[in-house]
Image 1 (tube, helix red, strand yellow):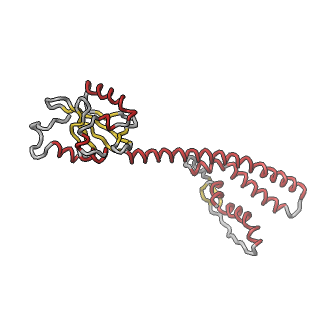
Image 2: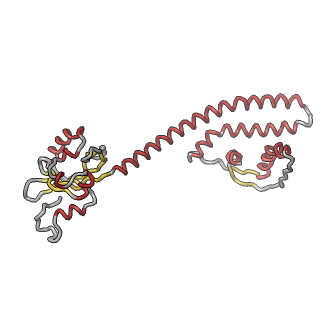
Length: 268
């Protein structure tokens, strides 16, 4: 609760108007009729009126037209049960400036009693920047959610469409393996089979990899022989290396590491 100017407890070297002007927020003091009796410098900055112009207005003049009737009723109700409190918690409060702009605000109310007519002090804070930042953050979150859903749908469709030709290749390879019998080309067939198996495993994990990027999947670590990993890489790379006339040499390794083989191959 704040006391009126003239209270004996007020510091003698600091008048009421000076204290108002030191306040960081717009500050208005209104009487029972809603007339603005006092204002500070920040109120002039926020609303665009001079102090004299503010003194000629009622508080509803500083609200958008659509809020005025309702605010008049709320003001009458508050006068009957005046107490310090924030105004309109959770609501989108707006102030109207002299040039017709609407400004997002937060308002705190407090009754002033000093022996005369009851007054109400209103601290008005411009929260336009905070409100805009919050709305932009919420919109970015919605965009990210939509992108995530679209990505999941794409992966599901792509995984299905890729499995069909892959399965056909596996079937043709099985037929070729049977027809070759003991032919030396069986070694190439075995390598192709390993490659197709790896591709099929990766396709089965496409959705999980997408979830991994979102932080919702934990890699399944298990013992992995580095030598076997290099052998798979050699099988995948050797045709391209030989085509370019290069030589690929990999030293034998018996080291065992702990990793998720599928995710590791995806990175490599």
